[in-house]
Image 1 (cartoon, rainbow, N blue to C red):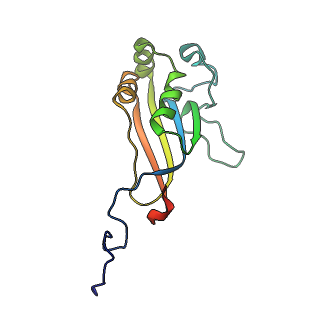
Image 2 (cartoon, one colour):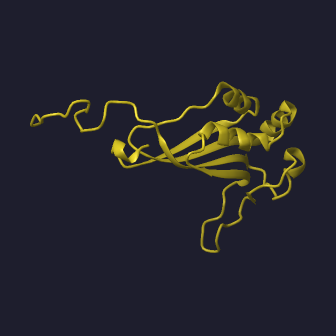
Length: 161
């Protein structure tokens, strides 16, 4: 490796060593209840959750006529937010739409796989965000596993605000 002259305040790849806040482009949140192996009908969980799903499908349904069939049923409620929204606040809004009663979630957890899926799209390199203790406690109370999909675009700190 040929040594290169570094600019002050930069790492070996030329990235800033100073903290630059994340510039969140968008955040998509999904609360997912997956039935395995039981099929879920679009409305079968509505009484428990007291709201209709954003999307629901049964095992064997297809997204399009040519797509493969779903291996499991799912009941999904989702929301999307754009910058400069706080990921934690957006997640709190989504969870507030779902029942508070721990017994509801305990009953659902005996038959279904409860998931929270977070897809975050942002600019800049090596960025992140935080979730509050209250949000994490609510997710734990709901007995959900959390899946993060993080998509970073660009590696220049000039992309971040």
